[in-house]
Every structure is written in C-alpha cells, then in structure tokens.
Length: 179
Picture 1 (cartoon, helix red, strand yellow):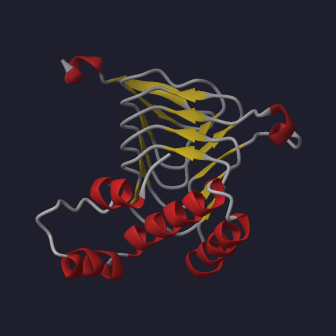
Picture 2 (cartoon, one colour):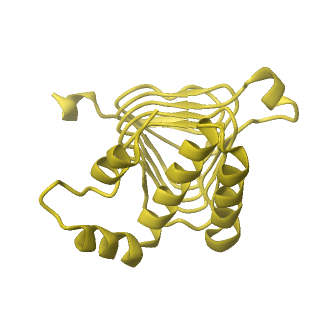
C-alpha cells in the first residue's frame, strides 16, 4: 500500500525541493492530477477501514469527473490519465507501474459474473493504452506494450509490442527498439 507522500512524489511528480504551494498549484491546475490524487486518497481510506469515506470520495470522482476506478482495483504508482473523460477500471483489474491511459478506456470483465470468477485484465508496467480501447476479461497486457485507439483486447498482449484493431492483433514488435 502507498502513502500519500509516495503518491505526491511519484504521480504528481514533485520532488522534495518544490514548495507545498507549487505542488498544490499543479494539483489544482491539472484535472488529471486531481483525479489521481482523489482516487489514491479514496483507495487509502477504503483500505485502512474508512470504507464510507473511500466510497464517498470515489462517488465524487465519478460524478464530477466521469471517471470510475474501482476501490478494489490494484494500481501501481505512476498512473497517468492523459484525458480523464470516461475512464472505467473495474473491480479485479491489476495495473502495473507507469501506465498511461487515455480517454474513454475501459478495463474490466467481459461477461456478467466475471466479478465472482475474478476474470479481469492484468496490465504490466510501462504500458500505453490509447483512446477508446477496451481491455476485457482474463487477459494479460505485457509490460512495455501499446494498445491502439479503439482496440478491443480479448486475448493476451505480448511484451514490447503494439496491438490494434477489433479484435486487437499484433501489428508491430517493439523489442528491437528497446535494445
């Protein structure tokens, strides 16, 4: 579990040299940072046993920003929401570190009853998910991969690769670029 300090340093991208006023101005001026901070505070509250406070803050995030991130999701530090409109992250979703998500992205179950079976996506580290992509069901999105805009992922995504289309297929290998 993360502390609020971890969140501010890693996700608001502030270091110890910045003043509190500089940090607050970044949070106030950037809706994406506000949503991430609101989510992290609601998640920390929920996990520490202050469930009603966590749910209240999460509901505010849904109503004010149109972002629904489940308090049961497991999301690593460094999450970046480039455009916050319409992002949905379901109950059992696991997301690694330094993941970038664009608007209208859904990560969740593929069928009714998936919450009982825990059939949710697992997203690795350093993944970029472009606008409108849907990642559904018990799939793994490998680290250092890219999911193209409006793609529907229902099968595993290899590491160091680009997937796009409906259903998503591998269109590029990024391994040679990483070496």
